[in-house]
Image 1 (cartoon, helix red, strand yellow):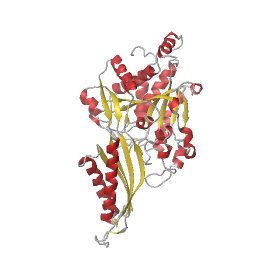
Image 2 (cartoon, rainbow, N blue to C red; image 1 turned 45 degrees about the horizontal axis):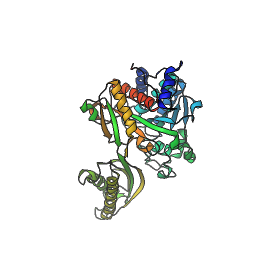
Image 3 (tube, rainbow, N blue to C red; image 1 turned 60 degrees about the vertical axis):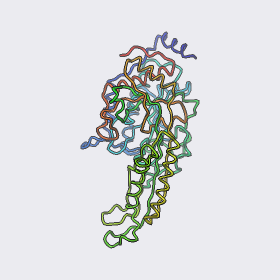
Image 4 (cartoon, one colour; image 1 turned 90 degrees about the vertical axis):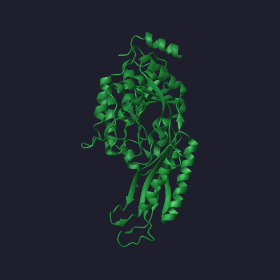
Length: 436
């Protein structure tokens, strides 16, 4: 059915009205979800992927969807899939929308979670209006996007996109604990991940609305961001093995201090970006020290090095330079240094056609928008293997994210969800109706 005939059928239907975002409902859900995992002292949110707080957040979203009469399923990767009805599944290609519920440690309430709640709102509003259109709206809450507890970021979206070869057979957390049990608690099944992969024929488009996590929109006075590209991300898990010893009786000469070696690795990663300019940014954000005792020379350190750039060749060069530096540091310090894990995502360009739909929507609503790249990685980066993708940004107050102070004005949160809804309607060949 053509877009024109779909739109005509929608307009003349006696049971269907153009969907509209319920701003009060959206903001209520964001507020309630933001209480899960919140530290009463700092106000920060800690919902590491597959943690107890993450499971509580998942249960909240699924309960809200079921209370709205929507169909909820959990796939083998633990991804939450929300549809208007089970009967509609497979009848049409889908416009997939979503993000993630997990957070970094002491992070903000909006990163990822806003995109899930906005997608839920779109599916619910679409169902309440009577359904229709050339595409089926489907919301998804991807598992473990951040990789804060289990160092397999984008786990859920990688499985959905069929990137199983990029995942270890038995994923482990940062302390070596297995994923198998926590995944089962989330409703997943490590032995059946292949069943959670979608075909490219099934997904016509993927849309993700997100807080910007930077200052560009706020400084420009723009209320909507149209993302033209998403940075690539190369995360190396590095294990440094030395020799434990007494801090007072082990001579400095001949020590194999894993923590001293790790400090050199941290500085080497920083130099790769800050001094040598081989990639846009490089970060060591987590170290696990063993035995982590004040009077013992460290025996082992496990850390993650995160390299990002919008150019794939530069990312490859940066990784090669870091691996060379690791080899030099191992020789200099008498330690063994090994890269024991790697999660890689190429930078991607978003769909020009979908970007045009977002821009049309912003013009229709009369709101200023800006075209900009995303310096952060998102599930859209991975889903791009499967389907055309686009991202909608809303301004971050102060340009901050991954911190308790992360915030966006309520009107902008509602506006972003409305732009998501209207863009999805346009993609499905449906009219958008007047703004409420």
